[in-house]
Image (cartoon, rainbow, N blue to C red; front, side):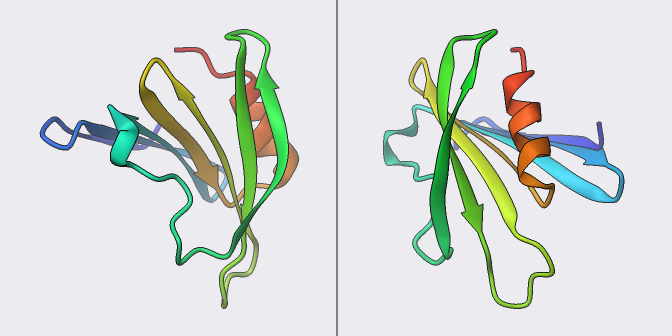
Length: 105
């Protein structure tokens, strides 16, 4: 665990974790109807659908490659009870999926 920020007015929160030298972020958007996960300026593509069996949640797995990046960013995103969640980081695909499949909240 590295840090967090909560913005009550915007109804958003993020937590940052470290794995080796890479950061992993959990972003939460409450009442997300106006929020978007993958922004238009990202060169992302949905590459798979994944499931967290512990919570019964289905999510989308995205791969984002931006010019100058040494490795892609992987994003797992889902909605749950009118909130939007993202886990993102420059891990390999299997690692980011493993984080999602084992998250509990």
